[in-house]
Image (cartoon, rainbow, N blue to C red; front, top):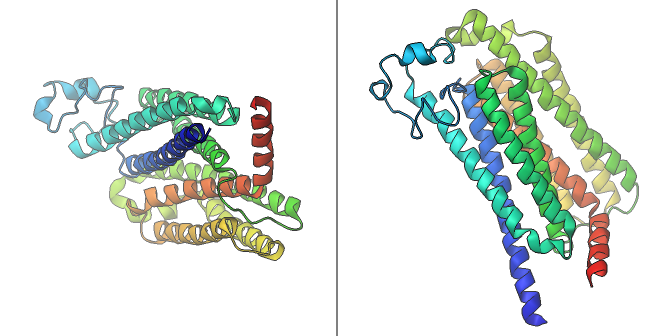
Length: 338
């Protein structure tokens, strides 16, 4: 029995470590996507899954067909001179996506033993595998449609959904193994505030994608050389996004206040919500840098990544707040198979 329990512990430990690695990789993929977007490298590889018809992208124009400008000129958005940096930025993004897909598949395989004691982990892993495959296909459509704005937004939202599913299975796998402080009173109120915080933050991310599309529209009108004029040429979407950040801040303050008021001890949940507040403040600061320092390319992926990290932490905090229910469901599963 001891040997059997030890084997189960090792398998579950492997699953949790692989789940954490997979979540980190998905976040790195989102960072890479932000870099692709901020550097205008979305069509650095004008075809898919190959890049300029090659499995290993070219590093100089001499490696391309003599008439490559005629073949790929339209898809390169008018930038018909080969740009090795943009090509490799996009290709590394694709490689990271493929690696993330392999990790999710590995996670699915490692989750099979959970079919006996917690089906939620297996089916959550299966769902994440399906979703990341769907997002890989969607990435190919983004290239095929030459960066259609609605597909770019959907591509990012699907990546966020994959993160949520992975965070769910990881939190479930940790149920009962970490100590989480309990909320003595008004737990439903804290739940509601946290849910609305998550909803409003998701809306804020969506508005942010609209601001990015507005910037693309400005670039088409005045070009990259007029970068310092981008913000002043933006429409109402930018001002809504900027104002709404204060709403997000207020909701985070409300969550922290409620938790500190209704918990007798400080634990992982309090640490998580405090970290959220810090990240929201940093996120607002990066937004200020973007608005008042001519939209520096380095700040754009940071701003996007922080937003997605904040969403992930909010979702994890919501799961931990309801950890007792997660444990109850797991106990029912284990009783069923005992």
